[in-house]
Length: 425
RNA sequence: GGAGAGAUGGCAGAGUGGUUGAAUGCGGCGGUCUUGAAAACCGUUGUGGGUUAUGCUCACCGGGGGUUCGAAUCCCUCUCUCUCCGCCA
Image 1 (cartoon, rainbow, N blue to C red):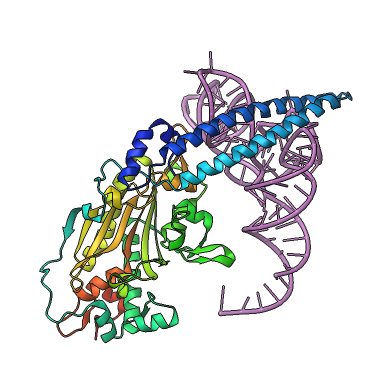
Image 2: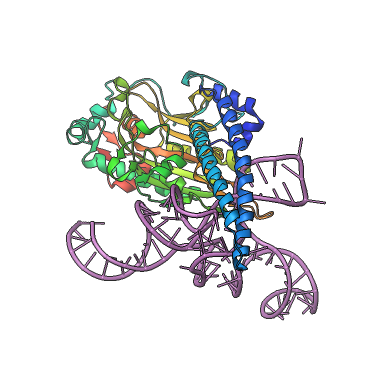
């Protein structure tokens, strides 16, 4: 959520940000409601102030055993007026809050202005020793190889759950588990994170806190009966761990890493883009979440990306880093880097991680603050998160990159101690 | 799922309709004392909103709603915690 005071003070800056993000400019609506709100508030408060003093008078009179009926009768009508005005104010505030909930975060000044993913900027790429973009003769894509080596079973996944649900079998399942454990251990050992294993169903308030609700309701699985949502990312439960809290400055930065399954309805996305692991309804992800002091958040963003990159370098999987342009930025993000891994069979880059700085946008919604050590003032934290990484797309690149000409799969060296075997097939 | 108890400021814990934003204790911060520290003593110590304000004012005692001139206090409802019973990986 944006700061209403900021919108009031710098409406043109907000307007420009919304336009760059391909969003509807609703600044004037906000300003009008804000104006109405303040007008009504002032009037209502004047009445309330009067009520408070007069009611105290009544108390004093009664204490002395005197009659206060005439004042009470007068106050009765004041109470009615207050009720009426409170109701009007409530309506205005509801409209305003609702509107603010749908207004996205503004892009940071360092974000390139652009409409679509075409205008994202490649910041750098990393290719392992001896890597070539030339496609190997007879290379199988991950789906074919998964079937051949009895690692993956999309057909049976569709049978037991529906299309877009994968089953890992045998050494495929072991490899997946190894990958998750390797990534968690790597971040814990080398990057100073604290591990979290959170619930995968969360309430509505948490979804609002990180910005998934109200806007993306249709993209999520919901348990109607219990008013719970299946998390689309560990960002939701982990960031909301500190919902409503005031942290100490000395507690920052908070660095969490956690594994969860992630659930996405992916409403309306079908076709060849969704083959095999390229788009699924459930996948595994190791997520990094940071709560930091505002002045450090952009340095922390760079670190976050670096942490994710380190995993890919250890796995020796080629990747590139994109800085998203304003139009491609997600609802809550002020700045975001995507990490894409190379898929030889698809002959293209696949998004395997997204690292974002939300500044205080989520912190406002989730009301996460910290108390400064020097002047004791409270301030919103900045929140960040990044995948480190999602296994499904990573598995595509891994299976294709580590495939031998005979159609076997070499287990990346760093995973071998986790799998207990070094080749599949 | 059934029965009961509870939810108050950083923590502990009073308060059951009238200067209570909230006693008291602990903690925190500032000060006196001290070579320094501790102890003792004194002071101070919640969050948010409105207002061209060295000020004034409103809201907040788990969430929401109600009764009343007036609610932390009474009523309804939801959530959560604890105890007992049932069920259960």
